[in-house]
Length: 144
Length: 49
Image: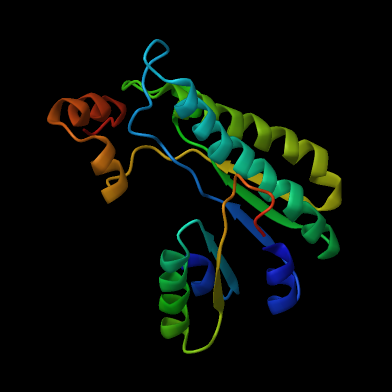
């Protein structure tokens, strides 16, 4: 992927590690299945790490750059609807981003994490598939 | 698409190659030049480049 980017465009300046998932079967500590936990961690945490593992050498070759990782407000607050694997994975993304920022600062590589609140997208609508879930999630939004 | 609007060249990487291709095509159509390309990739699998 990075080889393709470098071959096509010359160099890599920005990496946006945005891919992630929240599984419909993600639940609380008791009810979340191990395979759901592992899948969530694989994509949301290992995926961000892989993006950095294979992307940072490209940023070094470019003389520096920027990494943007998508975490979540649940990294800081937890969620009012049970989704423990997702919340844990996004906590890991935030912690990972902070360490990456410190470790690579002197290489002119900036690392930031985004912590968005719930956004009214088709993906989230599919996850919050009942009125009760929607209302429960809206407690996170001060203006409702 | 925001990156492209700021003048960046963009490699769209997604598990869903068709979706990534659509995004890249949308960018290129709007820009009137080839700013974006797409690749299919599984971020959790280092063997897929």
